[in-house]
Image 1 (tube, rainbow, N blue to C red):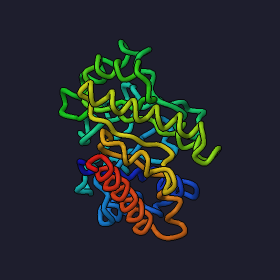
Image 2 (image 1 turned 180 degrees about the horizontal axis):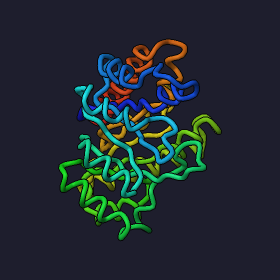
Image 3 (image 1 turned 45 degrees about the horizontal axis):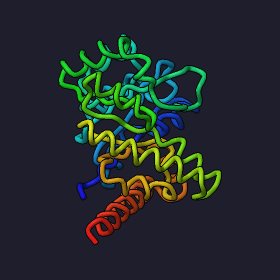
Length: 255
């Protein structure tokens, strides 16, 4: 089974910084520590209201880290111009509502083909790998294929919420099955499949075991856990759990 990459989202290091102002804690320092701890990439979401990551953070991340930068962005002209200026490794188009606390679900690619197409095309023309953050749904995967993007990231929030509601019961199994089915379909469509949102030490294993999933993007939990054990430790433990789940799944398939 192929190696599973870990992208570490450092948004909420900036959230803590912005709560008081000033420059501490620094998300760029967090990105460098994540790299040292075994992250394969860094993810940052530049929101319209700049509630956490700032424009300066994106500039410094673009210049100051060696890992690939995945810029999460809304499909707006402002964000497009920022992406074109900095040329991150990847641009993940996400839904964004000013009133939401965090991203509440996947992008409606199926209902927004005409709106999304020019953004996907212009990012691709600039050499930026385009991904769409979508719910694990057939119509959304087919829309991603229609738009010609190479990557989809499956929203795992419903699965994680189900887990903490019924601790592996029927609802959890249903939501996990949706992810497994969508990942399989992504592979059939020739789309590289990533996943993320809400993943924790308790929930990461079953998603990491899905062979079609090539990358997990995890942030809020790792930053929160760092309060208790340090960022280095939280990332290393997540990396270990991912590797363990991947190895066990590979062994089960070959048995």
